[in-house]
Image (tube, rainbow, N blue to C red; front, side):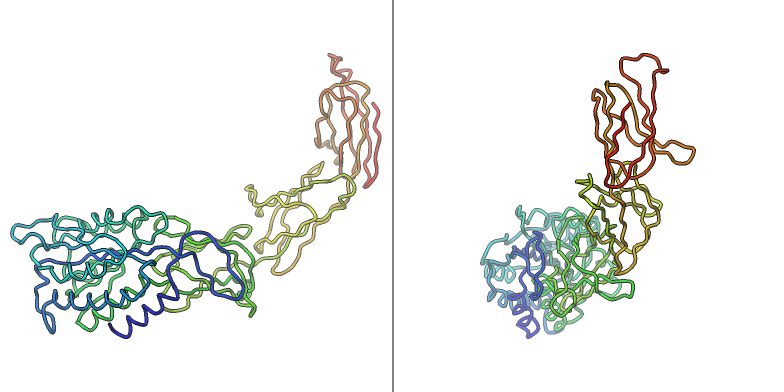
Length: 466
């Protein structure tokens, strides 16, 4: 096998494919996933055109020889990490007539079947047509059910679709359903005008000559078997990767499936930790800041360290109140400035990070405390403190119906409805001037309504008797 392929196989031993289960990073080491099975299905062209002359021999002879060398190199790798299978098309029936169902799974997935595949490849005699779409469609059935497998198709062909199928549509369906990752397509001596035909099918590699075909095989096998490294830079207002310690999710854009969950970490050198990602997937990233930030169409370049940047500048909101005076579980609703959707419900006497911007806050006191356009700035703590409440001890003498109102100038603002059926009640209120309006339950005329003004001071108890 070529030096390039041997190098990739060695790398594979170190960076083996992992599972889709969630995990967190460590601060000092490259983070890997649990090992999972990578399954590679070779879809091989056995059509009549493979007899064509190509440099040192026929296309079929050269492809068989180089495929055998590649398989020999794979035989040295621990086969518990991957399995391979072989589907061939165009090799069972001669043309004419054209048989568009000429496609067969010759060697199914199984451990240690490399020699079986080599023997089958060697026995292939090109005969028929090129049913690529049909072969890809049938390939969906070649992968046995597996909850923790990574399914890859490598299509090796010297021609374009010869039947009525649509390889692009079939490939998109395979990816959308999560049956297989985006296929690799190796074109053997294809005319330039046909190359674009395969761009929608998968990641296309042009093997214009024998040496290129050998190199391309090594590259494709490396990408199929190996993950690659990346770091996610959470950028502050200055464009520096200083933000960290926040959850992130990477999704497969084609299927919407969750591929990785991480808690972002800066290592001991103060730079974003190194991650291991599958380079065959186009990702969308959601950083679970408040509010969350997303980025789509993230492509990983195999064999190099990738840097993914996303703007997440944050500051802090600190809420405080003296809890010794009535509040045991005070909370605050936080909304984006001018919007009604709740972003977060923050407990008092806590500090929470938010993206830089303006927010509307609603503190669930009695009465509600509302402050709009609270500004959160980069790496700065915005502090909101409210005065401790007081307690209104209300002695009604009888049960009935009533409510407490806050005096705001000439207006009354409703604050709280008294609990029906209780003649004595304690209500925790913010400092201010209030009015209690009450009617005994036994009184069936509105004229018996009573009212009483009272004031509340921080840390004090006011007794109100009707």
